[in-house]
Amino acid sequence: MSKLKRMGIRDSTVGLVIPTGYTFNLDAFSIYITLAAVFIAQATNTPVSTTDLLTILAVALLTSKGAHGVPGSAIVVLAATLHAIPAIPAIGLVLVLSVDWFMGIARALGNLIGNCVATVAIAAWEGDIDRERAHAVLDGQPVPPTEDDLDVVVGPVPVPVQA
Image (cartoon, rainbow, N blue to C red; front, side, top):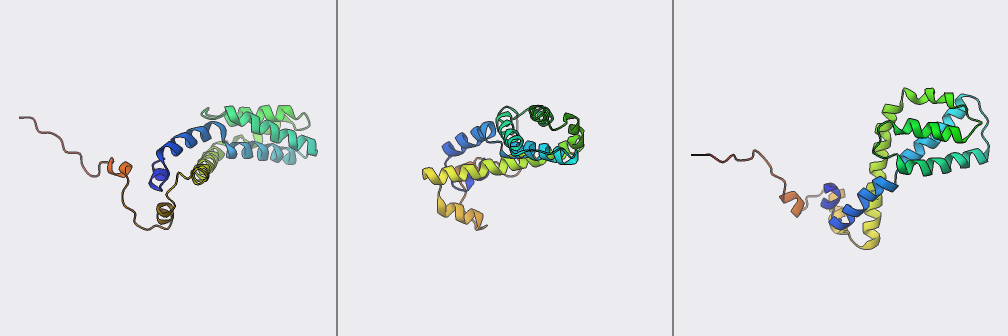
């Protein structure tokens, strides 16, 4: 959040969009559930109709809303998604168990990037971004410190001496 503020986005926009995004904007989680279900269908040689694919997408979009902050929730949500499509065998879930931890890291990174992009887009839409500062930060040019940068203590903290 401090990087977005350093880029020139107002505190109020960052403080509203980032937490809201982590509640409602879990794009990477929805993508993972959808792709994992399709992978399991292909790995088990199960034909999937267009209706089944749309159902997988709808279930993934709905179930991803309540999955944030629960470790291991992706397996439970994927099991629920597979249960919604009787054609895909739920036992195929074991095919993705071994890589779920690694995919969890990728999901978190994808959600972070999506929420940062959403913050910049909303800030630009609302006029809450200093475009010159944003261009300078993104180009790697030096920029004057913000109030948030000045609050950070650099170096060792002096300890008061008691007499």
